[in-house]
Image 1 (cartoon, rainbow, N blue to C red):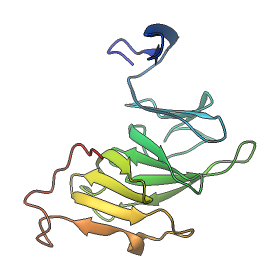
Image 2: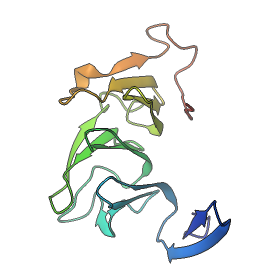
Image 3: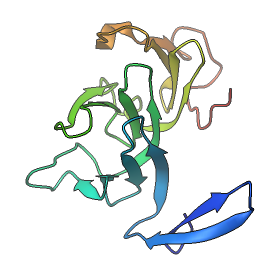
Length: 168
């Protein structure tokens, strides 16, 4: 994506850049899931799944915010979606089934501000927030808010709480 809200696809093998489409807002997250659905997270215009818009003002496809910063898929085909001020969303529902969302990390305003996600090979999802680093084991079938571990100033695990970027 560019500052001019145009989505391009880059093929590293051919080194070709191809214009795909014009978007209404800047794209911050992009993923094609294991069912072949295209997920596009924007800053300000909601989340698109195969061009179906999910937004906080939508009458039929409601999500808590319109700012989406990252998307990862785990081995259970759950989509983990980083939002700005809406916490962590977990989306479930296979191709042809309705998508449902569960919301995590909304216990305070800073935890709900998520910049980045990283899914490690062992299935642990790391979440970079304004409230420190959180982690959850996605190998678990059923995940609750209590399954999240926090690393932050309060528990003397980090020297600062604002985490912007994660790298494997």
